[in-house]
Image (cartoon, rainbow, N blue to C red; front, side, top):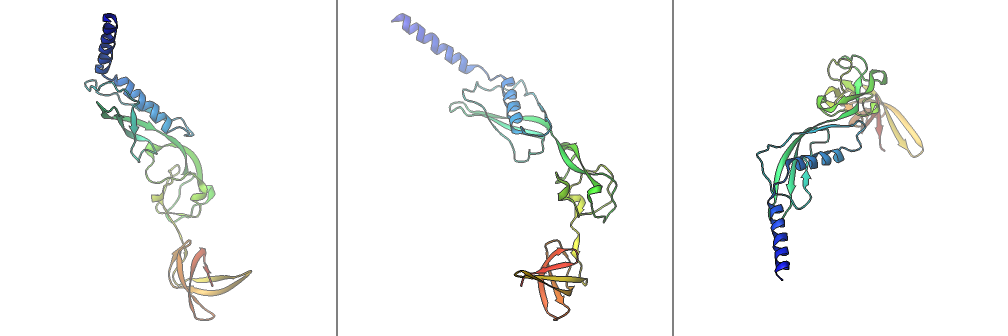
Amino acid sequence: MKKWFSALTLCAASLAAANTQPQPPQSIEAAVMAYLKNFYQGEQYEPAISVRPLDPRLQFPMCQQPLEIELPNTVKDGGRVSANTKCPDDERPWSVYVTAQVDLIRDVVVLASPITRGATLGRSDLRIEPQPMRSVFGDYYRKIEDVLGLEAKANLSEGTVVTNRHLATPDYVERGQRVLITAKLGNFTVQAAGIAMNSAAREELVRVKNLNSGRLVEGIASAPGTVLVSE
């Protein structure tokens, strides 16, 4: 009986000692590193991830459960990341923010040649090039097709990463412009000349005066100088 009591006492003492051991900070950092690698898995280029070491003066109880990690919603492009790392133990939960730097490289649309303000971008003006996301500001483009036909808001140099702040959608129709009114009636297409009463970009609404009938109709700017009317 005494032997069993001694064994149980020794086991309980060992468990108590294990529970009072601090969580190695290296294990917390390693958990964040593994989580970030999995989070950014699938990137075309291997991301460079560095986790900032925790302050050695910080002490956390040994977590008996797997650590839980949460990231803010603004980390899709990498940069400085603050990972909220939690121990979900019922008795002694804790949490700490671990900082990491994530450098991502992605293929984006850049200018293949200098562009002047007001110029319409064509395929020969653009190319795809890998760029570090930390140097890209604004909403960038991954496909050249998404940029074709847009206008430059300013003079831009070769190699500039094309973002939404650089571009404007050109007007397909300008106020007072003579336009082609197109209406589809079943299998037939009817066309007439008209005058635009307002300016409109692609797929925006525009009011047009039919020069034949004098009627005002409303349609969509479907192409430069063309208004599609639903009858």
